[in-house]
Length: 212
Image (cartoon, rainbow, N blue to C red):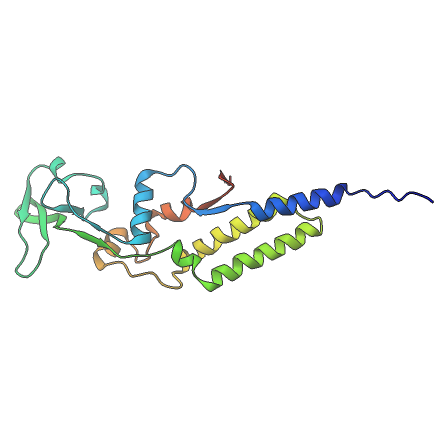
């Protein structure tokens, strides 16, 4: 009776690779090394926030792009203009030739409404369908020998990032509108698109390793 020898090398590798895919963790959002100020801004938009002054009576909001990041104390000769009747905001203005030019709005608090760019997108059925579709295609391509196991995970991560960025770019479903003042200061009315810092920083990681 002749012996039957089976080569299970490929089958063993296939099972091992499928187990790797099954057990892997894909993290999507702000991953890796991200500036702390961007993390604060992203978190404030994701969950909403109320910002109040810590060591002064007012929060100063610059009215000119070149004043962003500057303190009113660094500008000499500013004149305090108290709130109008029934209003809560004051102003700091500079007097030039008898004309007052407002440079800062002073307010007691800034309310940032929740604009959940991450959790809110994850909850969308369209997002879940798109990511699962990419996963199914990746598995099929893997079984056909067209992809390595880790490439399946990269495809899923890339698709998830793409779906989040598309939602931000298209504002669909819409996020809460920017205030008129914020829109004028930023030069556009698109939420979460200020200088594209958040948009460009969205990425994914596989088992803690950030995608290049």
